[in-house]
Image (tube, rainbow, N blue to C red; front, top):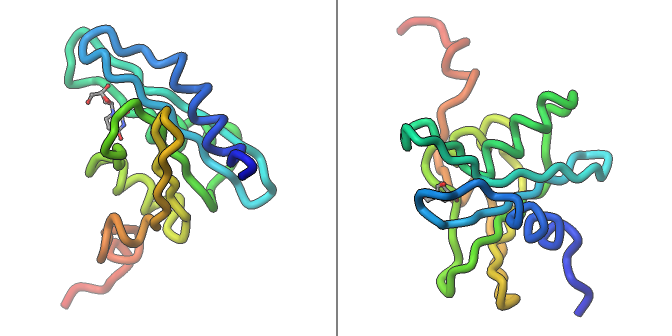
Amino acid sequence: MTPDPLVAAATEARTRAFAPYSKFQVGAALETEDGTVIAGCNVESASYGLTTCAERVAVFAGVARGFRRFTRVAVVADTAALTPPCGACRQILWEFAPDAEVVLANLAGRTERLTVRDLLPRGFDARQLAEPPS
Ligand code: THU
């Protein structure tokens, strides 16, 4: 089977993870509507709490490059049970990639496909902010 280039991009980005505290390296890659691929890796902080996951680094990098919508997301970690995005990343993915397919993958080549909607049912977004008061 031909390897998914988005998984390959996330796998490569994972090698740039800055994870000296957890040692848990994650790579993410997003595909835009025009096929552009934007990757990210987790970046940890000595304060721990300021750590940013690979998925959010990728989304923010994409937004900084002028993209506002992503159609696919790949997340790669070296875990036998595939690593899904954390709650904070699900929220950000919901806002910038609500219809995206999510490909979880590990270094052994295992993959699973689901959607952002599967990961965050009934997500909060700008629509609620636009609602009139009841
Ligand atoms: N992490 C990610 O980058 N993405 C995930 O989906 C799960 C967790 C990072 C955050 C932290 O640097 C390390 O993995 C351990 O939680």
